[in-house]
Image (cartoon, rainbow, N blue to C red; front, side, top):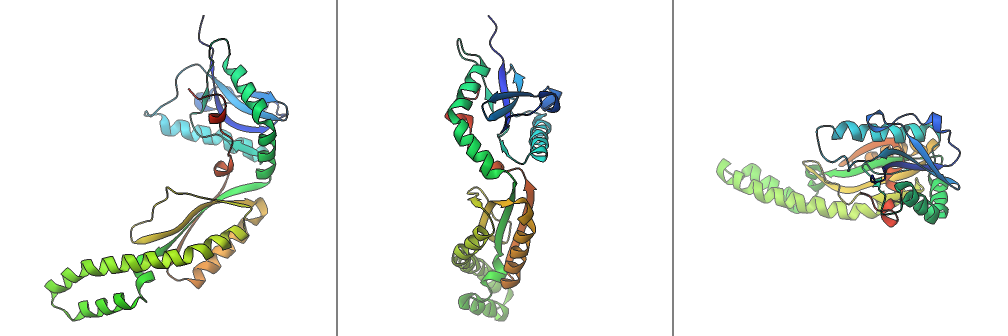
Length: 262
């Protein structure tokens, strides 16, 4: 007996979608709704293994994101799945059986999650300090810079390594002091905030905060204005502001708690 087809899952949405309106997904495969009560999973049939890392990976990731964007444009209440989430059959259970069982088990939480993100968008904000500017007022840094300016070239070059360490330490300390207030101010202009622990600083900078913000669709400009105020208050601050896009960072429901992927 052939192995039951797997189901590649793109997102959870509110039920009531017209199957004919879903279109196609990765590799132009037709999208299908799997409704359970008030929640629907948008999927395509996928009998093979996960896509994996090959030359077509980037294209397929973009196609996955295109489906989520399309669903989000039609109804902002969408809980996106990450790329390559696949539910498979097991024994007498088909992939659809397992997916439906999971949807029944999380329906209440999914409805709450869809309500939480509905009408809202995700923004990404990275706040960093320029290391040299942030350390400029530190007395030890100032003293060493002045000494370097008086020394012979050979000694000055040796002292530059010490200066770099002092600047790094001073900027790190300043970032630590700035973090609580900056986080609190971003939290006040969003309904939820999730930090990105894997974020790294650009060269010459020290990262203060990298976070995803969940904000009302009409409040994006408010966040931008607050970031402009922060930058005016702190000349050493470097701001990166991306979005809006679907609430990937706030889709806390994942098949890991139910039908296993793969």
